[in-house]
Image 1 (cartoon, one colour):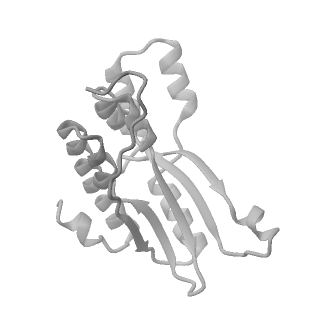
Image 2 (cartoon, rainbow, N blue to C red; image 1 turned 135 degrees about the vertical axis):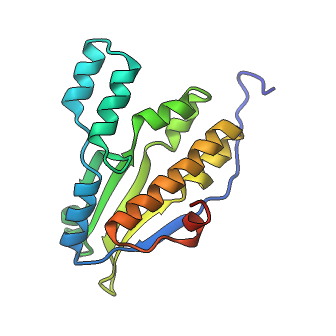
Length: 178
């Protein structure tokens, strides 16, 4: 057991996935944002205000996240970077599901460093649009808890389903889990 006021460093491996997404950047972004809708923040705030049951929270998440994920945050970095002359289309997202995160948070609140998942939709010099994301199991496996690691593998499967829905190839790291 670590002393309460001792700093610890944890070195872990991470796998970043670069997945080509069909269509133009605008088409890919539109499809991604349709499949991964924004969090219904007003409804979540209402649930919190009313001190709703966790079952209600789960039902709200199920309705809001048809493919298991919602967008918690979105930032189109392109206009800002264009001020420096960089014209790459790029949008950053925080994508996840608070009801899934709770199943890990229950064991260790530090998992919020890795949840929600950070994703980037971008196009480089070749014009190929890619969705980039860290493999969930590689992130959550680093917490040293088998229950958290199991949820990370479940997120791998949900990510594979989302890629299928996007019409994007499913990387072998995700196919092995299906």
